[in-house]
Image (tube, rainbow, N blue to C red; front, side, top):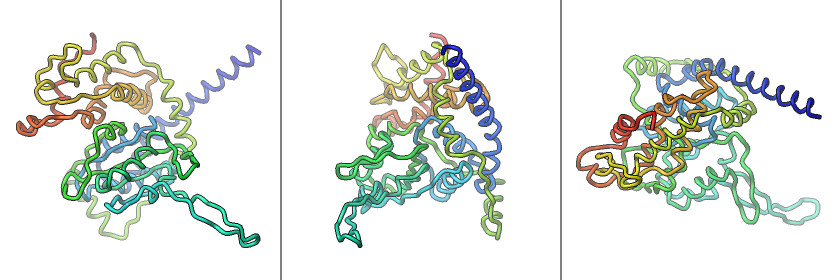
Length: 343
Protein backbone atom coordinates (compact mmCIF):
# COMPACT_ATOMS: atom_id res chain seq x y z
CA UNK A 1 0.00 0.00 0.00
CA UNK A 2 2.86 2.34 0.89
CA UNK A 3 4.70 1.57 -2.36
CA UNK A 4 1.58 2.31 -4.34
CA UNK A 5 1.07 5.61 -2.48
CA UNK A 6 4.70 6.64 -3.09
CA UNK A 7 4.36 5.81 -6.78
CA UNK A 8 1.18 7.86 -7.01
CA UNK A 9 2.84 10.86 -5.35
CA UNK A 10 5.85 10.56 -7.64
CA UNK A 11 3.59 10.44 -10.70
CA UNK A 12 1.64 13.50 -9.47
CA UNK A 13 4.89 15.40 -8.91
CA UNK A 14 6.10 14.47 -12.39
CA UNK A 15 2.82 15.65 -13.92
CA UNK A 16 3.04 18.94 -12.00
CA UNK A 17 6.58 19.55 -13.23
CA UNK A 18 5.53 18.89 -16.80
CA UNK A 19 2.65 21.33 -16.45
CA UNK A 20 4.96 24.02 -15.02
CA UNK A 21 7.38 23.45 -17.90
CA UNK A 22 4.45 23.89 -20.27
CA UNK A 23 3.54 27.16 -18.54
CA UNK A 24 7.09 28.50 -18.96
CA UNK A 25 7.08 27.42 -22.60
CA UNK A 26 3.59 28.82 -23.21
CA UNK A 27 4.26 32.14 -21.47
CA UNK A 28 6.14 33.79 -24.34
CA UNK A 29 3.78 32.24 -26.86
CA UNK A 30 0.83 33.70 -24.96
CA UNK A 31 2.40 37.16 -24.94
CA UNK A 32 3.13 36.85 -28.66
CA UNK A 33 -0.43 35.81 -29.45
CA UNK A 34 -1.91 38.60 -27.37
CA UNK A 35 0.48 41.12 -28.96
CA UNK A 36 -1.12 40.38 -32.32
CA UNK A 37 -4.08 42.46 -31.15
CA UNK A 38 -2.69 44.40 -28.16
CA UNK A 39 0.34 46.62 -28.78
CA UNK A 40 2.60 47.40 -25.83
CA UNK A 41 1.03 47.02 -22.36
CA UNK A 42 3.18 43.98 -21.51
CA UNK A 43 3.38 44.79 -17.78
CA UNK A 44 -0.42 44.94 -17.26
CA UNK A 45 -0.77 41.66 -19.18
CA UNK A 46 1.91 40.00 -17.03
CA UNK A 47 0.13 41.09 -13.85
CA UNK A 48 -3.23 39.87 -15.18
CA UNK A 49 -1.63 36.48 -15.88
CA UNK A 50 -0.17 36.27 -12.36
CA UNK A 51 -3.52 37.24 -10.84
CA UNK A 52 -5.29 34.51 -12.80
CA UNK A 53 -2.80 31.91 -11.58
CA UNK A 54 -3.41 33.11 -7.99
CA UNK A 55 -7.23 33.05 -8.30
CA UNK A 56 -7.15 36.80 -7.79
CA UNK A 57 -8.93 39.78 -9.34
CA UNK A 58 -7.60 43.00 -10.86
CA UNK A 59 -8.62 46.64 -10.83
CA UNK A 60 -7.46 48.42 -14.00
CA UNK A 61 -6.94 52.18 -13.84
CA UNK A 62 -6.55 53.99 -17.14
CA UNK A 63 -7.94 56.58 -19.50
CA UNK A 64 -10.47 55.57 -22.17
CA UNK A 65 -9.08 54.09 -25.36
CA UNK A 66 -5.97 52.44 -23.92
CA UNK A 67 -7.11 48.91 -24.74
CA UNK A 68 -8.33 47.59 -21.37
CA UNK A 69 -11.29 45.74 -22.91
CA UNK A 70 -9.16 44.46 -25.77
CA UNK A 71 -6.54 43.12 -23.34
CA UNK A 72 -9.17 41.16 -21.43
CA UNK A 73 -10.94 39.73 -24.48
CA UNK A 74 -7.70 38.79 -26.26
CA UNK A 75 -6.28 37.13 -23.14
CA UNK A 76 -9.45 35.04 -22.85
CA UNK A 77 -9.13 33.92 -26.49
CA UNK A 78 -5.49 32.91 -26.07
CA UNK A 79 -6.27 30.90 -22.93
CA UNK A 80 -9.59 29.38 -24.06
CA UNK A 81 -11.57 31.18 -21.33
CA UNK A 82 -15.23 32.15 -21.60
CA UNK A 83 -15.40 35.97 -21.63
CA UNK A 84 -18.21 38.33 -20.63
CA UNK A 85 -18.23 42.12 -20.47
CA UNK A 86 -20.61 44.03 -18.18
CA UNK A 87 -21.05 47.76 -18.72
CA UNK A 88 -21.75 49.25 -15.31
CA UNK A 89 -24.33 52.04 -15.30
CA UNK A 90 -26.31 53.85 -12.56
CA UNK A 91 -29.45 51.80 -13.32
CA UNK A 92 -27.73 48.38 -13.32
CA UNK A 93 -29.35 45.97 -10.87
CA UNK A 94 -27.69 43.09 -8.98
CA UNK A 95 -29.78 40.55 -10.92
CA UNK A 96 -28.40 41.99 -14.18
CA UNK A 97 -25.04 40.62 -13.05
CA UNK A 98 -25.87 37.45 -11.14
CA UNK A 99 -28.98 36.28 -12.97
CA UNK A 100 -32.58 35.85 -11.92
CA UNK A 101 -35.37 33.34 -11.35
CA UNK A 102 -38.13 33.17 -13.96
CA UNK A 103 -41.37 31.19 -14.00
CA UNK A 104 -41.68 28.59 -16.74
CA UNK A 105 -44.73 26.57 -17.68
CA UNK A 106 -44.48 22.94 -18.73
CA UNK A 107 -46.36 22.71 -22.08
CA UNK A 108 -47.39 19.09 -21.37
CA UNK A 109 -48.65 19.35 -17.78
CA UNK A 110 -49.32 23.07 -17.52
CA UNK A 111 -47.47 23.16 -14.21
CA UNK A 112 -45.30 26.15 -13.47
CA UNK A 113 -41.86 26.03 -11.93
CA UNK A 114 -38.98 28.38 -11.19
CA UNK A 115 -35.94 28.35 -13.45
CA UNK A 116 -32.70 30.23 -12.84
CA UNK A 117 -31.29 32.16 -15.79
CA UNK A 118 -27.56 32.74 -15.18
CA UNK A 119 -26.22 36.25 -15.59
CA UNK A 120 -22.97 37.35 -17.26
CA UNK A 121 -21.02 36.69 -14.03
CA UNK A 122 -21.11 32.99 -15.01
CA UNK A 123 -17.97 33.14 -17.13
CA UNK A 124 -14.26 32.49 -16.65
CA UNK A 125 -13.10 36.05 -17.31
CA UNK A 126 -15.51 38.89 -16.50
CA UNK A 127 -14.78 42.50 -17.43
CA UNK A 128 -16.64 44.88 -15.09
CA UNK A 129 -16.35 48.06 -17.13
CA UNK A 130 -16.41 51.32 -15.14
CA UNK A 131 -17.36 49.54 -11.92
CA UNK A 132 -17.57 52.87 -10.05
CA UNK A 133 -20.55 54.02 -12.13
CA UNK A 134 -23.04 51.72 -10.43
CA UNK A 135 -24.58 52.07 -6.93
CA UNK A 136 -23.11 50.24 -3.90
CA UNK A 137 -25.86 47.60 -3.88
CA UNK A 138 -24.88 46.40 -7.36
CA UNK A 139 -21.16 46.70 -6.58
CA UNK A 140 -21.73 44.47 -3.56
CA UNK A 141 -23.30 41.74 -5.72
CA UNK A 142 -20.19 41.66 -7.89
CA UNK A 143 -17.80 41.71 -4.95
CA UNK A 144 -19.69 38.90 -3.20
CA UNK A 145 -19.26 36.72 -6.27
CA UNK A 146 -15.56 37.65 -6.38
CA UNK A 147 -14.98 36.69 -2.77
CA UNK A 148 -17.18 33.60 -2.44
CA UNK A 149 -17.12 32.41 -6.07
CA UNK A 150 -20.80 31.68 -5.87
CA UNK A 151 -24.11 33.42 -6.49
CA UNK A 152 -27.26 33.33 -4.36
CA UNK A 153 -30.68 33.63 -5.98
CA UNK A 154 -33.72 33.12 -3.81
CA UNK A 155 -32.95 30.14 -1.57
CA UNK A 156 -30.49 28.56 -3.98
CA UNK A 157 -26.73 28.98 -4.27
CA UNK A 158 -24.93 28.45 -7.57
CA UNK A 159 -21.19 27.84 -7.86
CA UNK A 160 -19.15 29.73 -10.44
CA UNK A 161 -17.07 27.50 -12.69
CA UNK A 162 -13.29 27.78 -12.28
CA UNK A 163 -11.15 29.46 -13.35
CA UNK A 164 -12.90 32.71 -12.45
CA UNK A 165 -11.41 36.19 -12.51
CA UNK A 166 -12.89 39.68 -12.52
CA UNK A 167 -11.14 42.56 -14.26
CA UNK A 168 -12.78 45.78 -13.10
CA UNK A 169 -11.97 49.09 -14.78
CA UNK A 170 -12.14 52.61 -13.43
CA UNK A 171 -11.86 55.82 -15.41
CA UNK A 172 -9.71 58.36 -13.52
CA UNK A 173 -11.55 61.25 -15.17
CA UNK A 174 -15.26 62.12 -15.32
CA UNK A 175 -15.84 61.59 -11.61
CA UNK A 176 -19.30 63.15 -11.77
CA UNK A 177 -22.02 60.56 -11.23
CA UNK A 178 -19.69 57.88 -9.84
CA UNK A 179 -19.80 55.80 -6.66
CA UNK A 180 -16.36 55.42 -5.11
CA UNK A 181 -15.46 51.87 -4.11
CA UNK A 182 -15.05 51.64 -0.31
CA UNK A 183 -11.60 50.71 0.97
CA UNK A 184 -12.90 47.38 2.31
CA UNK A 185 -14.07 46.47 -1.19
CA UNK A 186 -10.87 47.66 -2.86
CA UNK A 187 -9.03 45.22 -0.62
CA UNK A 188 -10.74 42.36 -2.47
CA UNK A 189 -8.67 43.12 -5.59
CA UNK A 190 -5.28 41.44 -5.66
CA UNK A 191 -3.75 44.02 -8.00
CA UNK A 192 -4.44 47.63 -8.88
CA UNK A 193 -2.88 47.95 -12.34
CA UNK A 194 -2.18 51.30 -13.95
CA UNK A 195 -2.62 51.26 -17.72
CA UNK A 196 -0.52 54.00 -19.32
CA UNK A 197 -0.18 55.44 -22.80
CA UNK A 198 1.81 53.26 -25.19
CA UNK A 199 5.08 54.32 -26.81
CA UNK A 200 4.92 56.36 -30.05
CA UNK A 201 6.01 53.32 -32.10
CA UNK A 202 3.33 51.15 -30.49
CA UNK A 203 0.76 53.84 -31.25
CA UNK A 204 1.89 53.85 -34.89
CA UNK A 205 1.29 50.07 -34.97
CA UNK A 206 -2.12 50.54 -33.31
CA UNK A 207 -3.22 53.09 -35.90
CA UNK A 208 -1.96 51.02 -38.84
CA UNK A 209 -3.52 47.81 -37.53
CA UNK A 210 -6.92 49.22 -36.58
CA UNK A 211 -7.48 51.36 -39.69
CA UNK A 212 -7.00 48.51 -42.16
CA UNK A 213 -8.73 45.25 -43.01
CA UNK A 214 -6.26 43.31 -40.86
CA UNK A 215 -7.94 40.85 -38.46
CA UNK A 216 -5.55 39.34 -35.89
CA UNK A 217 -5.75 35.56 -35.71
CA UNK A 218 -5.19 34.75 -32.02
CA UNK A 219 -4.52 31.06 -31.39
CA UNK A 220 -5.35 29.18 -28.20
CA UNK A 221 -2.15 28.45 -26.30
CA UNK A 222 -3.53 27.03 -23.04
CA UNK A 223 -6.77 25.42 -21.91
CA UNK A 224 -9.01 26.41 -19.01
CA UNK A 225 -8.48 23.07 -17.25
CA UNK A 226 -4.70 23.60 -17.35
CA UNK A 227 -5.14 26.99 -15.70
CA UNK A 228 -7.12 25.36 -12.87
CA UNK A 229 -4.34 22.80 -12.33
CA UNK A 230 -1.70 25.54 -12.31
CA UNK A 231 -3.69 27.48 -9.71
CA UNK A 232 -3.29 24.52 -7.37
CA UNK A 233 0.41 24.08 -8.20
CA UNK A 234 1.14 27.76 -7.48
CA UNK A 235 0.12 27.34 -3.84
CA UNK A 236 2.58 24.49 -3.46
CA UNK A 237 5.65 26.54 -4.46
CA UNK A 238 8.05 26.67 -1.49
CA UNK A 239 8.95 30.00 0.11
CA UNK A 240 11.53 30.68 2.82
CA UNK A 241 10.67 32.21 6.19
CA UNK A 242 12.96 35.15 5.36
CA UNK A 243 10.89 36.06 2.29
CA UNK A 244 7.63 35.70 4.22
CA UNK A 245 9.03 37.91 7.00
CA UNK A 246 10.09 40.50 4.41
CA UNK A 247 6.59 40.60 2.87
CA UNK A 248 5.00 41.00 6.31
CA UNK A 249 7.42 43.80 7.23
CA UNK A 250 6.66 45.60 3.96
CA UNK A 251 2.95 45.49 4.71
CA UNK A 252 3.52 46.49 8.35
CA UNK A 253 5.54 49.51 7.22
CA UNK A 254 2.39 50.94 5.59
CA UNK A 255 0.62 51.21 8.96
CA UNK A 256 1.22 54.49 10.79
CA UNK A 257 2.00 54.18 14.50
CA UNK A 258 1.86 50.37 14.52
CA UNK A 259 4.75 48.31 15.96
CA UNK A 260 6.91 51.39 16.31
CA UNK A 261 6.65 52.38 12.64
CA UNK A 262 8.57 55.63 12.30
CA UNK A 263 8.72 56.07 8.54
CA UNK A 264 8.12 59.80 8.10
CA UNK A 265 6.08 59.69 4.89
CA UNK A 266 3.75 57.03 6.32
CA UNK A 267 3.10 58.97 9.52
CA UNK A 268 2.60 62.18 7.56
CA UNK A 269 0.40 61.03 4.68
CA UNK A 270 -1.17 57.62 5.45
CA UNK A 271 -4.38 57.41 7.46
CA UNK A 272 -4.73 53.62 7.31
CA UNK A 273 -2.28 51.01 6.02
CA UNK A 274 -2.67 47.70 4.23
CA UNK A 275 -4.41 44.67 5.73
CA UNK A 276 -2.88 41.17 6.18
CA UNK A 277 -4.45 40.33 2.82
CA UNK A 278 -1.64 42.39 1.26
CA UNK A 279 1.00 40.14 2.87
CA UNK A 280 -0.85 37.07 1.60
CA UNK A 281 -0.97 38.47 -1.92
CA UNK A 282 2.70 39.43 -1.90
CA UNK A 283 3.67 35.83 -1.19
CA UNK A 284 1.05 34.21 -3.42
CA UNK A 285 1.86 36.58 -6.28
CA UNK A 286 5.55 35.91 -5.73
CA UNK A 287 4.92 32.18 -6.12
CA UNK A 288 3.12 32.67 -9.44
CA UNK A 289 5.78 35.09 -10.70
CA UNK A 290 8.50 32.59 -9.84
CA UNK A 291 6.74 29.79 -11.76
CA UNK A 292 6.16 31.99 -14.81
CA UNK A 293 9.89 32.70 -14.84
CA UNK A 294 10.78 29.02 -14.53
CA UNK A 295 11.78 29.05 -10.86
CA UNK A 296 10.51 26.78 -8.09
CA UNK A 297 11.22 29.16 -5.21
CA UNK A 298 10.21 32.72 -4.33
CA UNK A 299 12.91 35.40 -4.22
CA UNK A 300 12.92 38.84 -2.57
CA UNK A 301 12.84 40.29 -6.09
CA UNK A 302 9.44 38.69 -6.73
CA UNK A 303 7.96 40.42 -3.68
CA UNK A 304 9.52 43.78 -4.59
CA UNK A 305 8.27 43.60 -8.17
CA UNK A 306 4.66 43.19 -7.00
CA UNK A 307 4.72 45.67 -4.11
CA UNK A 308 3.22 48.64 -5.97
CA UNK A 309 0.24 46.93 -7.67
CA UNK A 310 -0.57 45.10 -4.42
CA UNK A 311 -0.16 48.00 -1.98
CA UNK A 312 -1.14 51.16 -3.89
CA UNK A 313 -4.91 50.71 -3.59
CA UNK A 314 -4.71 49.54 0.01
CA UNK A 315 -3.20 52.77 1.39
CA UNK A 316 -5.80 55.24 2.61
CA UNK A 317 -4.13 58.63 2.26
CA UNK A 318 -5.13 61.78 4.14
CA UNK A 319 -5.87 65.27 2.85
CA UNK A 320 -2.30 66.38 3.44
CA UNK A 321 -1.08 63.97 0.76
CA UNK A 322 -3.31 65.71 -1.79
CA UNK A 323 -2.08 69.13 -0.72
CA UNK A 324 1.56 68.01 -1.09
CA UNK A 325 0.82 66.07 -4.31
CA UNK A 326 2.05 62.77 -2.85
CA UNK A 327 0.57 59.51 -4.16
CA UNK A 328 0.65 55.92 -2.91
CA UNK A 329 3.37 54.85 -5.36
CA UNK A 330 5.80 57.39 -3.92
CA UNK A 331 5.15 56.10 -0.42
CA UNK A 332 5.62 52.48 -1.51
CA UNK A 333 8.94 53.46 -3.10
CA UNK A 334 10.11 54.90 0.23
CA UNK A 335 8.94 51.79 2.07
CA UNK A 336 10.90 49.56 -0.34
CA UNK A 337 14.01 51.65 0.30
CA UNK A 338 13.65 51.62 4.07
CA UNK A 339 12.66 47.97 4.70
CA UNK A 340 15.67 45.71 4.39
CA UNK A 341 15.56 42.13 3.18
CA UNK A 342 16.99 40.86 6.44
CA UNK A 343 15.30 41.84 9.68
